[in-house]
Structures are given as structure tokens and as C-alpha cells.
Length: 110
Image: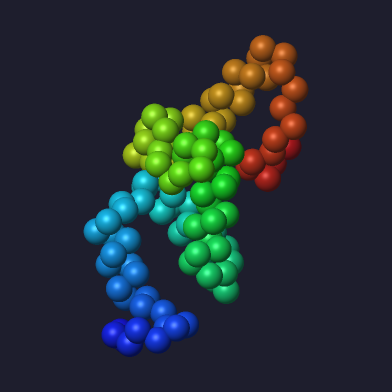
């Protein structure tokens, strides 16, 4: 870790420590970032956080304009990836039974 204060210097180790101490990230956000970076290893961490934040805000798991979780986001952050998939599948099934046409295909199957 560098302790220089020149312009353009990145304090990668310090940034991580400060972020963990000052602003704890919601579990669902960390899981989403980990998943994005696993699929795109060359993507920077900040880009992965931006993508994950935007998508989670869009789905209602994070409050708009913040990284603060909603009740739904807190609840889903405590679930495992498999449990989230099961609840999503159950919701889609209920929507189909009510006659709502489902355009989504999250599992890769039809």
C-alpha cells in the first residue's frame, strides 16, 4: 500500500478498509458485484458496483439514488442464491396462473 498523496495515486488497500468501516454494503449488493465480476473478470470493481447498484435499484432491492437496501433488499440479501431463484420462480408461476404473460426468461429455459 502506498501512502503518497500525489494526484492520480490509488490507495486500494485503504479504500477497502475505509469502505468497510464507514459504509457497510448490503449483502445483496456484494453478492451481485461478486457475480458480475465472476462473469467479467476484466471489469473494474467500481464499474461492477455501478452496474449492480443500478440493477438492484431498478428491481426495488435498493432505494433510488442510494445503496441503502429496502425491506425487500434486506430480506433477499439474507437468502442464498438458490432460495432467491426459488422465490422468483414461485412468483412467476403465480403470475402465469393469473393470466399475466411472462416475457422474462431468467433460467435460460423456455
